[in-house]
Length: 231
Image (cartoon, rainbow, N blue to C red):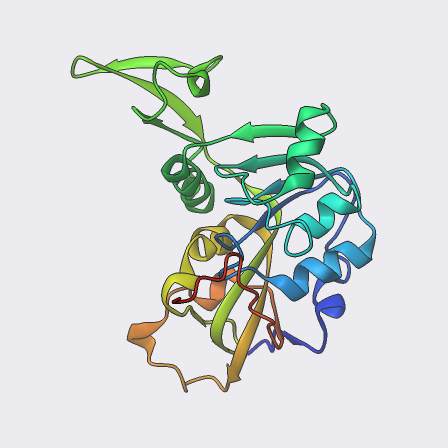
């Protein structure tokens, strides 16, 4: 049985990074992001990245850190708020952006992991999203074709894992992580709790270990995007 655990985020990424690669990153806002792996990716110095993620974090955390260092060439996202540097680079034509409706992005990631090269959806028909894409009629309605996403590297955040890579996510921190875990040629996961094989209830596992190549145990900061308190 392969032990997939690495000692540090840097060790977990060793040999898996390259300039110009496509990296898919889990998370929604700052919830469920593989924050320590993002820091390790920044320190690796790779450039020209295509980053696939629901959003780009904030200016000083998450993928926003890679925007600061200009390591991202293109973002494939569905939401780009909360990040002034993202806005600046995009408006200055310094950053390429491929917009996706949120559900479409989730399905593109799932399709890529399932080996489905393309699918048809009504979402986006008649909008700028549909420009340049194949249209087809089904039962009297117009659909557009979207392609599945495959990444060279998938970075995932999970709550618990065993040493063989079986994963459990926690509540809304699950978000895009399960789809991203399946779409990577190599999948690296940071977790908050690591247990021995057999300790997880098999019926509660969200991502089977077959999809996971490496695991690293980290301590998360869990920053809050917009803190709201009662008056």
